[in-house]
Amino acid sequence: MGAPRKLAAGLLKAVLRLVPEESRQWATAMLHELDFVDGDWAALFWALGSVTAILRHAASVFRMNLKRPAKEAGMNNTGRKALGITLGALSALFVAGCAFPLLRLISLMFPELGYGHASWPYWLTVIMIPEAIFAVATVLLWRKRGPVAAGILATALIMGLHVAVHAAMH
Image 1 (cartoon, rainbow, N blue to C red):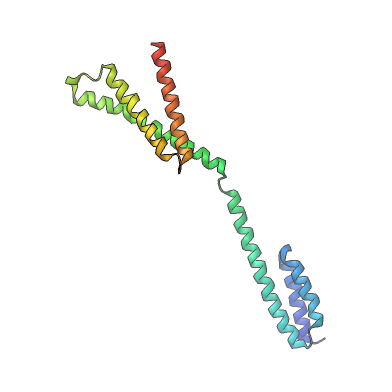
Image 2 (cartoon, rainbow, N blue to C red):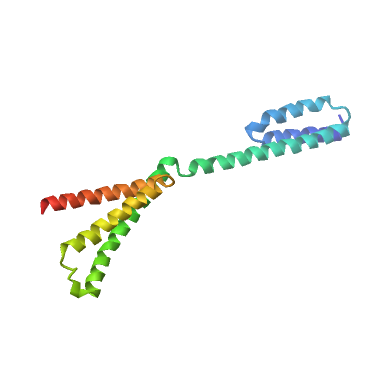
């Protein structure tokens, strides 16, 4: 056995030790096929081509393994739904929270209207307008952003229940 064939065998053995498990069987097969290549230089060139093919395969396996955990580490469908519901609820609470300053602003800008102490402007501004916005937003978002619409709807229902309990108690 000449030096080129020894170099070819040593190269394939080194690659066999370094490649991942998915490529190891293929590298072992190429090492055993080296015995059937005629000529020392032909065996070296065949080993170089084999090493190139094995390393390409190992690199593709490595890339696949890198991509797999990234998908698993991402947010699953339940997490996305929970985030959407939370965003919907927070946006609905923000809209409802804007109604109180709006009522206060109207009473400060137009004190002659007496809206600061009347109950119907309070009911209209703080409850009815946000509830109408919630209903419209829920209908418009239901198909494409279902979890967000569900969060808005849940907030609207809780606020409506709060108003009903408040009205029943007073």
